[in-house]
Length: 414
Length: 222
Image (cartoon, rainbow over all chains, first blue to last red; front, side, top):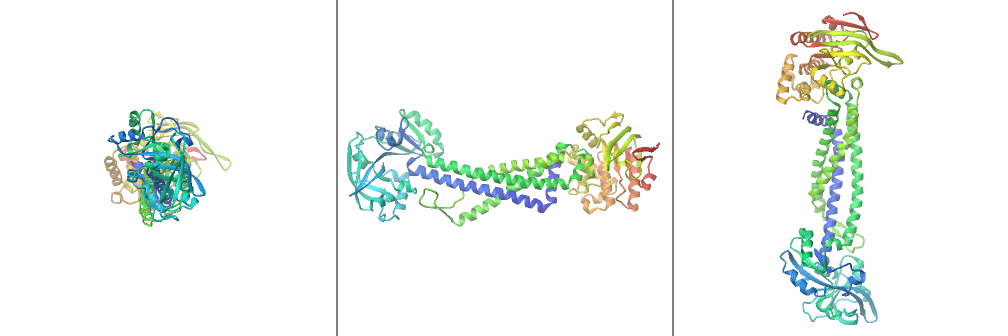
């Protein structure tokens, strides 16, 4: 403990220099932990969007891999999807099961026809768990979107909600009559007249230009689907149990493929990889800056104390103990820097969040979002441990230099 | 107690060979011995070899009859910590520690528990007349007081031998004389041997033995 006490006193000896070194450590902590909080917000937003955008926590799909076209038709489907959904709803871990039909076809407005990607949903169950109403609310601000509302619960109603871009390309608005054309389950061409009841904005331009939503009843009639469903989205009562429930439920559903949302949300995975790469590189650079700055400071401190080290060695201090002394100094710098960095992070995070700053729309999305840097203790711990390791490494070279001093030369040092 | 047998330690200085050559001395228990000689005569070199700070090129250092100069660095460190004490010309106290903490330092490095180290350090400071200054940092003490703290630090672990390099060189006569009296008293009452490198006549006058060096060689038999 004497070495620890000596190390602490040494740091307090040159207060200004110690303060400058601490500022480097604090700046590193601040940048990394705020970036971590921002990443957490982004990942949370993306995962929410994926789950509440229709994936749910788990998806029941037909067994085997589906290629692009198969995923958008009933060619390969869950033949008795409705019964399966009813059975799954009895499971205590399941909060809701949302059957869906994915289909594609042409949407006509008189002389103009545009290809679409359609999703048929349960108009009663879907809004309870998914963000479909939010999308319609956002779509209401699009040209022709005034009066947008959700699909009727009346099974005989033939209604459609269009992506804002799709409506624009057809010159359609709320109240327009359009014709849906697609192939039935058996491959025959079929058409159905529908009324536009709403526009939706899903946040991604490519989706808004192509998607439409109808009720399961409307899609069943158009596609002659009967009880067949493309997929079932399962909403779990405890989302944290997704992996465990996947394994358990898969055993109960032979002949199907049960997949968690993160395997299906390719956009989420890509953005996450990109962010991890960008912020990982930034983190490495910051750690390097901290390493060089603190190593320089500690080396200066060693150079100023060469005679003192000579005296300590003459008194019987082992070379390894001098190395330990410098390691203690690095450890205290790391601990103090992390403590101050955490305080600064929490204060700055609170300040930035209180400003309600609007972030620009991310690439490929149509609207921005409010900055809300998350509180992520695990990130703070990882940053603190990373900085601590950096400080120990930065103390290594000066420590080795001190440990290798020849005593008689150190005692002569002026 | 301390024997230096035919010690040679040479180095290049300004293109010439300097150091000590074939020096043999013996310092018994409780003896205040002085290595005297002009600057560059090899006093400090001999003291560093005797203090196991620098291995000799030739010859042997013996402590209590045991050859110690060829021991591995770790063992020599341990011997310095437990058996030897050092006093330097420039005091060389650790500036961030108080007089008491400086005196406790070698004891704590030996692994003594803090209360025991404190008790022994306080006794050592009391013996050199600085009990009332124990909480002062070196910067708050006069040169004479700092050197007394250095002596207390050297003596606190109860060493066999204290090596002092020009201990009075940074002090005026009013402080140098009493400091040497203190060393002579300590040598007598504790049986600790002192080997002092100095060219100060006041130091030489208080010595039990004087080894005179000239150009690295013993000029006069003790």
